[in-house]
Amino acid sequence: MSEELKCQICGAPATVHLTQIINGKMRKIHLCEKCAAKHNATELPLIKFAEMITKKLFGEKLGKEILEGTAKAFSEKDLKLGKQCPKCGMSESELEKHERFGCPQCYETFAEALNALLPKIQHANAAPEGCAPAPAAPAKKHKVAAKISVETLEQALRDAVAKEDYKLAATLRDQITALKNKPAKPARKKAVAKTASAGKKAPAATSTAKRSRGGKK
Amino acid sequence: MSDLKRFLADSNLLPHRSLPILISSRVRLARNLADKVFPERLSPQEREDIKQCILATLKKLPELADSVCFEMHDLALSEAEMLVERHLISKELVEREGAAVVISPDRKLSIMINEEDHFRIQVMDAEMNLSLLAETARSLSEAIARELPFASSPRYGFLTACPTNLGTGMRVSVMAHLPGLVMDGQMEKVVRSLNMCGLTVRGSLGEGSDAAGSIFQISNQRTLAQTPQKIADTLQDWLKSLVEQERNARRRIVRRNKSIFCDQVGRIYGESRFGMLISEGEALTGLSLMRLACDLGIFPEYTRVRFDELLIETQDAHIRFRNKIAGTAKPSELADRCRATLFRETFATLPPPDFSRI
Ligand SMILES: [Zn+2]
Ligand SMILES: [Zn+2]
Image 1 (spheres, rainbow over the protein chains, first blue to last red):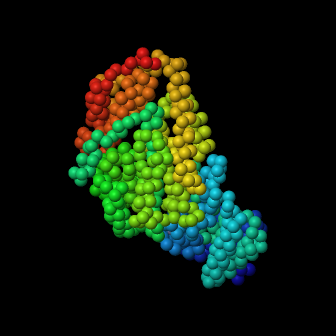
Image 2: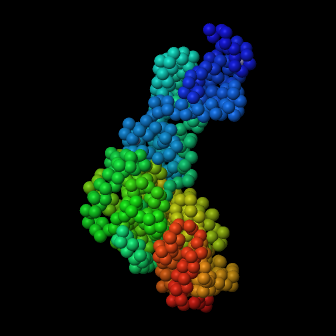
Image 3: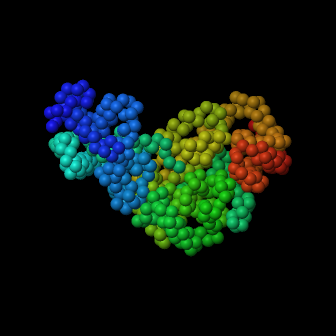
């Protein structure tokens, strides 16, 4: 069946098939090898890629509308995939948006995001004494980050299989394998994990860190 | 409600003492109840229940005997704004649902309930003994904790809604009047060096406010991995050098521009003594200059307290409340007229500037 499909960008026979959720509905994207390679279809974080392709296929304006619908559909999915505080229900994306924790338990649930944030908001660099929790963490933190990403991806993989979306499943499986093989750059892995779950462009650490300069009353 | 009106109308308890350069000091502790969701994420009913539970407990504490308690939904907006102008509550508390405040009879202590955290314990003073203030705040928070345990973790310390308050939950701040450094063009440099030492500088009304009247709020940035004592000491140490720098700047200004400076003081005195319309901004700038003149000996020492009183009483919500001006429209000719009246009445009791002292 896939033999008959044509690349949606250039019209050549399509060999790469991706699934996108638009307005809550699944939509397939078909590309030839060349176009897929040109746009790094397999390497780019999925959301970024979907964004680019959607704008290419539907034009800047309509594409943007479609993407907004996609983001909405994703945010519901996000609750399932992203971490959520068992006590107060705070999700990772809410935490990023409000920059406030919801309850004491959140400090355990989002320990990883907090560790990334603390050196910035508590100005560890400013004073001579040094800020204890910040430098103590990194080695352990990386492992946790890698583990979380794999778990998130595996959940996404199970979902994809359940929906018989084998192409997406294959992509996810490749990402998981890559992750398991070289646990090198946690920040980028986080970005990959995020794209599978949320419709946000920036990875958790950077967007949450923005408040650091303003300070608090 | 009559209780509130009496409380707000009572100005006997405005500052009795007033220091040059440093206006007031404050220690604030952020605390939350153990095992309870922070205020922001509570349902209105849960928030109400927690508020009532906290209020019932606080009423029993001997440390808070004779304190007054206001639930925010009982206050008119202008009344709540008066409490903000006196720094007894934060601007943010005014908009919070299910919030309340407990204030001690001498107004040196206030506990906000259901602000961003369940508790915001504040101790204020015109003196500059920061470690004493920190100790007062600590013992009060411990008295509360004996009845209602606080959320904490062995790793971080006290847990707060915003991680910028994590650990000690303590913000020590000093309100400083630095017209010399501002006029001398040094303020930027001073702010930078304060920042280097972990101190934040803001306008007098806290976050986002500008430094009208050359009044600045200086406070610690970090709350984590430091003892409360250390936080208080760091700021206290800085105050000495800050006061010294401000004095030097003032000396330079007066030496270089004595006649311009005296002219300014004379003109502002004239406006204050005889003006018919004074806006809130004019009042603040004018009083800032009068306070500076007092520090330099142009007005006698006892006048500083009067200037500090006026700094509070000429703010918009105070003027509207005292003169029963309805509505909340900010720029109002009626308010400006009432403010000018207050200025004329006060300045009629003060001696004219004496420039022979500088
Ligand atoms: Zn193609
Ligand atoms: Zn939580």
